Length: 215
Image 1: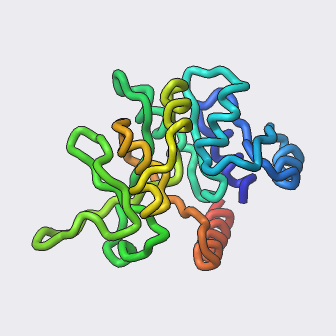
Image 2: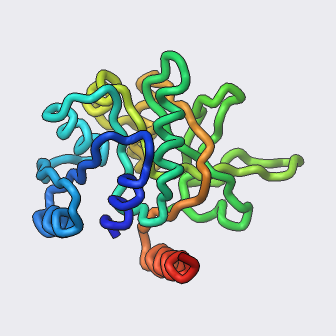
């Protein structure tokens, strides 16, 4: 799974260096066998952001991108769009992506929903169906597992303690919102699947098989 993610990020045009950050020697070996670069990080890292921040302390850069290793269907174009959501907007420090979500999938708590302001700022993320559409036709948005950060913002959010909303929903981005950080949300080019359950794995394998058959 991680090699699929690695290949997607290496295919992006706006990424200069790709590093797989892990605390598992088996994953590092798998990545290196695939010709990728892996760095060992602390097993105490509580979130993906903590792990990226650890790499950032060793690897200076103008911006950092966190593509979660359980997103094997994340296309290279989404990676470039996440970079664009950060770098192409003046003064932006933190960005992510969203994609339209069918109403029939909105009740799945493993699919994170996001509500976005007209100017592109994230208002809230939730595992619950948000917003509640009382009369209008639903237009839900799914949050994808990808983040882009400016260096100082990455260090700042990684230093924050867990927050009440984060603990309630088990979503680290709520910690950032509670602390007053702005998260800009770009439009993804395609959907992706975060593999959190056996059902997600079956669906991801099905889509990967179909994709390989077409190519």
